[in-house]
Image 1 (tube, one colour):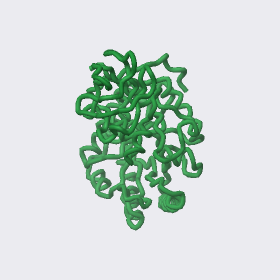
Image 2 (image 1 turned 60 degrees about the horizontal axis):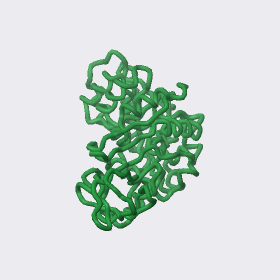
Image 3 (image 1 turned 90 degrees about the horizontal axis):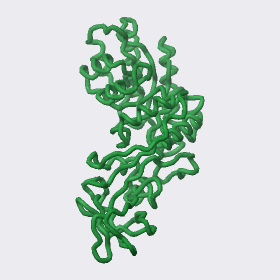
Image 4 (image 1 turned 90 degrees about the vertical axis):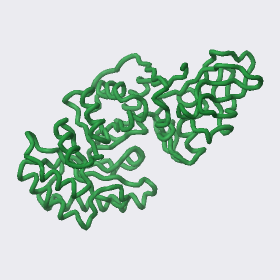
Length: 352
């Protein structure tokens, strides 16, 4: 197919610099789950490391291993979807930082033979989001278990972490109070974490007290703004990707594009947005499984290129997301692996 997903790695580098500036003095942990939000893990990680990123959030052990293979030994890689003893063993072997938010995982770690080097544990407190994490009423018991593991050489207490809802300032303030209380309890128990991390993209940009030592930023790094929130210009970020299709036929008052719902364009969007053609914006008429019909223009011809959404287009991923009550990263994640990725770059500016 001629359709392609174009990724501007220089724009990505500019976003990384903007994120670094926004969250300072905390460090940026670049989140690369789901194939770097569908942008291509290898290329994204390679450029991030060249731009000086030293922490990467990889979601699960399989992704963590893939990141390690590209990033080399000097980058810290944090994973937090752990299914049990095998994942723990695999994460330790791959030199990953392990996000543990379940007492059962602490028990699995206790049952393992003492590893060549301690498991780097980031213990998660549930601050009310109920997105795993150890409940406050169970926190003291979890600290006792972790203290034993540290004493046996099976673990080091690298981090305290959690998620917050980022739905309202009041709710997030309450969550932060739980987080701070959990850290105080850990310190009182003789367990002082080397790193604390609570905020993701939105809170990391907007709320300085939430930044702690690390800020986990995924969507903003790729130029995806929050639905219903500030725009890209206000945030100082820019979309790095463009979904491009090619005209395959002119059919009366419409042209047919070589990209449809099977390639990741939600069919519920038909008739609701415009694409960028050589003659300017044109309305999307129908979205079929293998192709899309768009209003025609004079001199339309097979081979013409159309920007469906993204950088340089009428609509961004978040613009489309807001039409169907979802978030921009969900639109980006829909782009099928069948659509070839093409990368543009003038090369890294400099490693930091």
